[in-house]
Image (cartoon, rainbow, N blue to C red; front, side):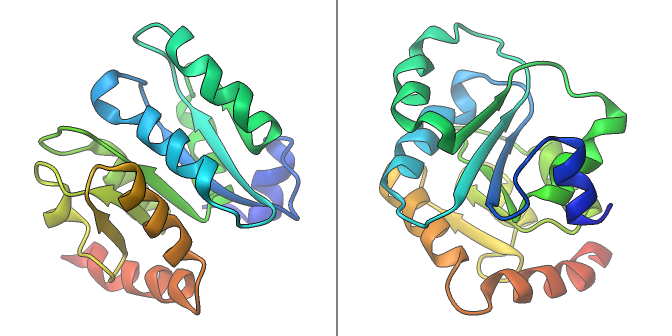
Length: 172
């Protein structure tokens, strides 16, 4: 992990904004459409969504959602080198995995490595890897569920608490 200011500088991000991260190969089952729709309903000021990864399907179906969100979405639609991974996870408050189906995800292990809280959907083995309300949230794979989890993330001391809990949960 690097300092957030260094990560924002490296990625040309405004350090005054807050960031959520969708990371990895973009495929239908990973639910980017759910996340984009949920994010469009979140009114948290200065919150941005970073979408970082290669499209393994047509990008066209996402274009209307990207366009509607304008500068609230930062799209880095390319392969992210191993050297750059630390910047994305260090700049982000949390990583969101709104999967429609899954067995597990390597992104959760990367998030643990960089002490980054997670929002995951209740599919496959994701709830076993991300204990709900301890290191993030487990939510139904719906727009409303993801929206609620994002909004809850920024209430009270949830982010700070999740970051502290990741330290002990990593050991498990």
